[in-house]
Amino acid sequence: MPLKRDPMGGGTEADGSKSLMYCSHCYVNGQFTQPDYTAGQMQEFVTNRLREMGFPGFLARLFSRNIPKLERWKQ
Image (cartoon, rainbow, N blue to C red; front, side, top):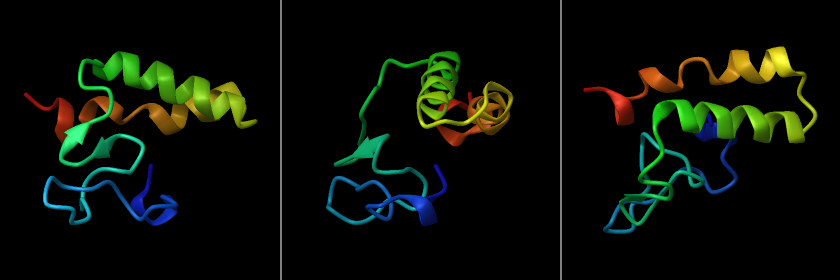
């Protein structure tokens, strides 16, 4: 989720400051809300969520295509 569209303005670090990298749906108090999700599982989750919100499947997949490239899943 783009941080500028996050209703909370981003997730929070352990010290309570705003995360500059992660949204409030994924990151709270310095921890991921779904720590065991793989990049593929997150793509599926996001795609399904976008479809529930009324986005066509092709757009939902397009919007979630870069999830494996996020810092969280870099090795």
